[in-house]
Length: 141
Image 1 (spheres, one colour):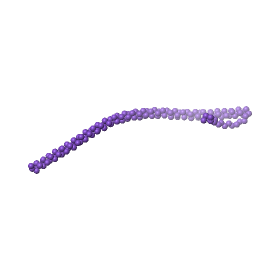
Image 2 (cartoon, helix red, strand yellow):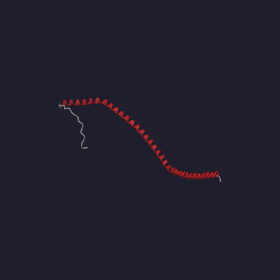
Image 3 (cartoon, one colour):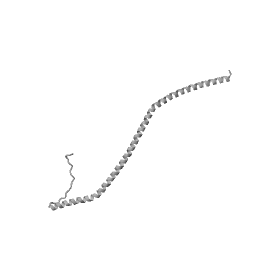
Image 4 (cartoon, helix red, strand yellow):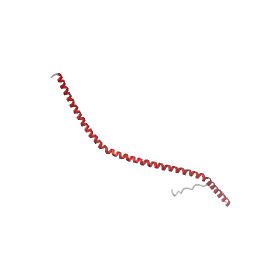
């Protein structure tokens, strides 16, 4: 056997060993991939019900938010109406106060003057009355 034959034989032997090692590594990678595929399938089986539940709860939450939004819009309209009514009542109260305050004050003055004049004509002394608010009934408290 010559040196060239020995080198070719040695190279073929080293290539065969390298291919065998490569085959062993590839078989192990294939086994790892099979295990990984099994784990991924197991994870999918576990997460599918969770995702379905999450979708259902998201849909329910969306419906609740839509309902709350429509209720809030309706409440906003009611509040706007209440504010408009309040402003209208306030304006009419102010107008009534302005319209009726002067005649009521004049009528009260006329009544008080008439009362004093009637007392004077009857011969009684004229005392200025101080009108005090009625005291609350203490028995009820």
